[in-house]
Length: 383
Image (cartoon, rainbow, N blue to C red):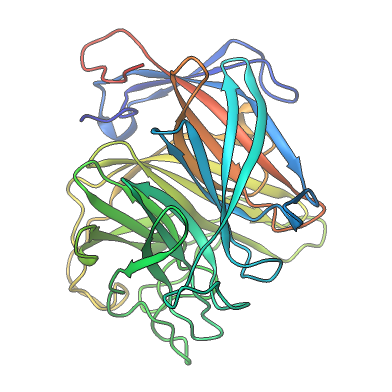
């Protein structure tokens, strides 16, 4: 299947929204990655929020770090990044009622506990769930691990009731190291899972491995690795470099902290993906930008132990920004999750969700965009 959003004319029709751009205003983004075959219209539909402190089944709801749409049921699943501290590691079943007029409701239907290899719930601080996808009649989900506690990240297959089935192989050089010379950065490991139509799976770190280069700063980009897995065997078959942009904003009003990372990826076809970069600057807030990514032509770097020390030529994946939420008047929260779902009339809809960090100053935010194909040669988006 060709890309749903590989466009030279990606139009953002901004629906009426409090604090957003004027309704009906069109913004054109010319030729992302020089691919001009399939123009589509991405229309902002609306926002729905769940307040921090909302209780579901006696447990505080929040920490939504991954979301996926189940075409068989018309429902969604969303994983919480609670490290089994408020309740055992878990994901939720959601019903999202949305249309071109906005999101009318987000209902939490069920809570499902994720199980460790021995069939028990995860112990406190033993896991950091970050993403979940529906893989046929199974689930694939990621834990970021814990670099400080020397807990490696993992990718696992589970049944829909949360039971462990198998674990993918961790590539060499990804396990945390005590001296922080190799492996994952703490809280910057497996954050994204994208399912390619071919059956392969792309898993992405939030920032560079220690041996590959720095995390993003105001002046430097960060070379993170995308790991391509064969889903059937759970073995890595390739790795690509994704350059995370420099941090877009400095902290203000005496703040000290800012960062930028790759928070999610969503496959559109076997070569094109959407990528979300999530940045935070203290006392300024979040910056959320969506990029079109093309794997075609990128160097397979799985045999390069250190990107910072190699003399081999490396071509990263191509990327082009197609949307900055702040630029169109949306005040984003901590967006970490995205999926292609369905509106009530069956038309495709891009759904974004935020991790509230269980912070009373934040919220669990859902944003919806309808996607419509425009007339023209090469348009492949189907309703």
